[in-house]
Amino acid sequence: MGLTFLHTADWQIGKRFARIPGDSGAALRLRRLETVKAIAELAEERRVDAVLVAGDVFEDNAVSDETLRRTMHALAPFRGPWVLLPGNHDAGSTRSAWGRLRELAAVPESVILADRPEPIALRGGRLLVLPAPLPRRHESRDLTEWFDAVPAEPGVARVGLAHGSVTNRLPAAAEGQNPIADTRAETAALDYLALGDWHGTLEVAPRTWYAGTPEPDRFRTKDPGNVLLVTLGENGAAPRVEKVLVGHYRWERMACEVMDDAGLSLLDGRLAALGDGKRTLVRLGLAGTLDLAARQRLDELLADWRARLHFLEVDDAELAARPGPEDIAALGATGFVRDAIAALVAIEGDAEHADQADAGRALQLLYREHQALRT
Image (cartoon, rainbow, N blue to C red; front, side, top):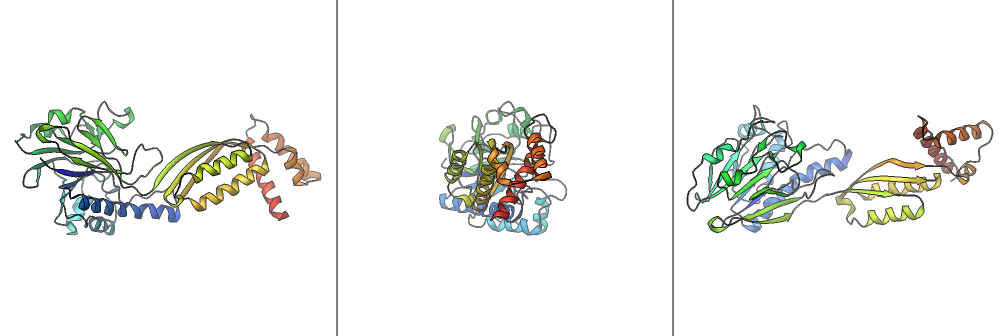
């Protein structure tokens, strides 16, 4: 057949990243458009026959007109054809992004909005795309069923394009809505089934792939940041699928136990080993026990890394700060202040006390303020 195409999905242009404030969140939003442009440049470089986008082009149907236009401009490096499918985030409902794009007359000639369940013939009829657009966010029936009824023709490659959860192949929590039969590629005689909704790259069934999001957007996704370059085989042979990394940012999870200065040095080294900090977001879980002086050194280390990384989120719920005799002596308190500190120390050391965590934080604050006054 000699046909190649890029399979991508889950761009979610306009995603807000509410938990990542300020410039860091804004940079993530803007980067998604830059990654789309990188996909277009890759498509042009590889001279593919089409780019198929399997849903969730936009974060929702309320994205601004400016965002709609910017997305269409980002496609310009590849002259097409592009096939864009509505997913659950941008379902083809009333006043959808797709209808607004048409009203704005913002759709380039190279772009096909696949918001109707009807065959799309490309490359002189040699490539037939069968789309299953979502008209609503959630569907209980399999919208790819109609693929089976489309007659196969000799010499015509058949590619399904859908957004949802492949039955019997994903965790149960992922299969509740928008089901897709795991035998669809077989029953519809598809050369390839291009899917969106799962944010990591995954071959989920024979000839059936999730491309994953091309720009990572969460800490828990497996193998994001790719597009798939698909070459269709001759005479029904299995397609050749090449994973191509296009993502800019890396989202890393890390857990570390810190008990002393050696633990702090280990943590510092592990963060440094991540490489380009400005492209890296880290969710860090800390556990262990530190005295107050070491806890202050940890806070200073984390403050430095927050400035060096694109974003750092720290969960220190399992990290205890236990004042030692040297910490208490360093405070130099007398009288009722000494008595108050002793009471806080007693509460912080009682795992059953309801105010244990607050007492620990109060001691850390006292120590930090005392050290600041000394300097």
